[in-house]
Length: 346
Length: 237
Image 1 (cartoon, one colour):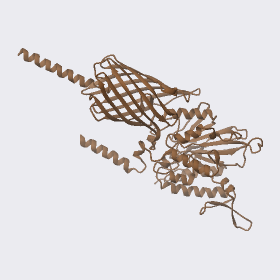
Image 2 (cartoon, helix red, strand yellow):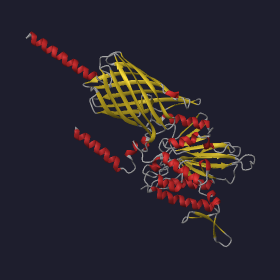
Image 3 (cartoon, chains in turn purple, red):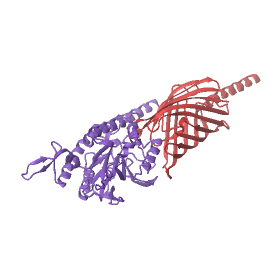
């Protein structure tokens, strides 16, 4: 009998340690801390002179009417098909930005190099669409002058034409020390994006649509992030009015299925955040993580939990993305967006 | 011959009563003889949302028979950031020197900071070996705040405990891993820690736990969420 126990334990141990997508010790002690990531993100943003944890200000071509795209859990490995399709949809539809809800790659660090190449391609495509040239060698944007010479754009302009692809960090992105690789491409895990929507407002400092990206990869926001969102700093300068508020988080709040073997927020934090979103007068909270669709209104806030857009989790074509159409009067409509990509048979 | 028969019967009865004593020594508290258990502990800890917290919890358990019991619990931490109460009934099925408990529990929690009310309903089976105990169950949680309420899909409740001494020993030290505590049931967040008890007098026992409650366990990214210590007394009569 003892032999059977020992063989079972050895087999389980072997399975857990041989699978490089599993981090058995992470069940008790994870190898990356949300506090560290948020502190690093805050330092990066504050050093760059961006107050209130604002990552970037995007000025849309048409500030009164714009769309943005939301997708989740692409779990990219060596096949970037679905991720490329998401970016193509964004470029073809002139969406203002893409918001990804995390687990952009599937655990292994080498997938980040594939992701980096994909992002570089789309940085170039996006720049070309805007009439600029992206130089992959130095990572700067240029414009061609009358003589055909490349002229480096000024710093302020460089910031404004960055490829608008914003990602919340997911647990699979960083399980195997992926944070350094994630940070290389996305710089921060906790940030805001502001979209000015009333640039003619001269009395105050204008009105914005505010996009808050939370770092919930660990299933908790941690002390540092909780302190920030508890502070008034979070919703920015009081003279800047917030018209619409959208929140993006990897970890979900509602469990659409019984056997969801993935951690959600602990009880107290779950209630705290639901209450906080309502207090902020959030319009929509987008979440991923659970790979299953759910929509509901809770506490006056619209919640969407998105399905995985990964070609392995959702192999058939389907409506895996959401597009939000924000109109000039501040009202918005949400529609599902179809994805066609199917992985080639091996 | 007659004397031999009496001696044999007496010996058998003594052996049975000794065996009964061992069998009934379960749940780390019950010796099979008393009817009432009153217990209480002081808890102190810290979590990400509310910072430091602490306060008393009190319990009373009544053994109607050696199989059936009913327990009530009340948690009232200082600062009133949260409070909770529950009622739990259980039936014990002895199997040799092990026990199977079939338990049903109803619990109410008030999370003051978020103005939320939570009702939890749990059905569990606990297998209790002399050194090991395993609990498996199912929990339904219904919570309401901000004028909305959500009835969660059923969640699996599970726990494993191991002791270094057999459970009938006067003292013990052990480890546990589970996704619940006296006053919460989590989904897939595991809490773990060290537990102990020691008998001060026959009717009085001291017990305690160090409880580490990380978030993100089954996302393989366990991170600091809550840690707490509790220590208390249990008196039986």
